Image 1 (cartoon, rainbow, N blue to C red):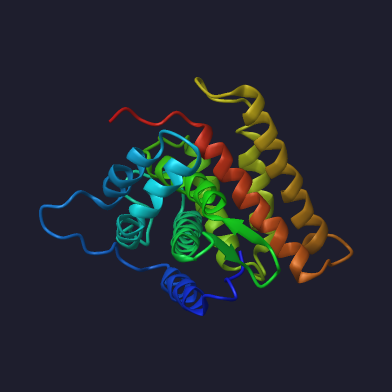
Image 2 (spheres, rainbow, N blue to C red; image 1 turned 30 degrees about the vertical axis):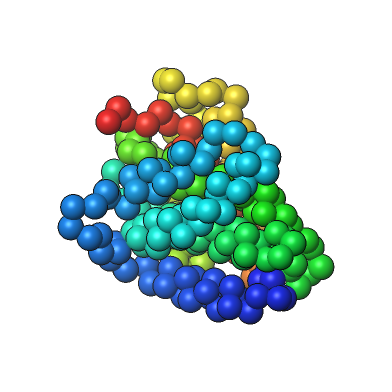
Length: 249
């Protein structure tokens, strides 16, 4: 999402946030003694805003934008303990939520309650709140503990190496390892949506084939095609992870 032309400070805030996320070894943000854990704090601030719709709900969200900003700012930069997603996926999710909250705050402060992007797109505060809803729900869902199958743990560990070293000489061997591990995950685990599992599984398989075609076949594709295929594998695997039922608190 591009920064609004009338609010250059928003662009600076977004760039600062994503620069912070770039450090994969960053420690969780400090939490004041006696306060709620960061993810619980986000849920405590966000959930009361969820009921209702229309202008009244948007007004309430605008009134609470400072609390939303504060809650997002304390989210850990690494995936919380027990979360089944990897750090890269978590970074992307909280970065997207942070930008969505900044866009909401900018729209709330604008005289017309709208945000004007450099692309020419115009979004209302209500539109921005919809993005906050999507991203907040994603962050809260990713933070819920899940028990990965052994093959999923091995897949995730190998995938992290592929994501961080996409041009490695070992890429094709790791791609083949991912394909073997994925074959062990063809049947959906108990208490998961079989149709959604099959769709996500097929998506990962397709994009592993794209990696093979772009790097391990006779014709080498463009770097952007390889990067997109790796991203799609990562996203598809995350969908498999999130189909697993969360552990009971």
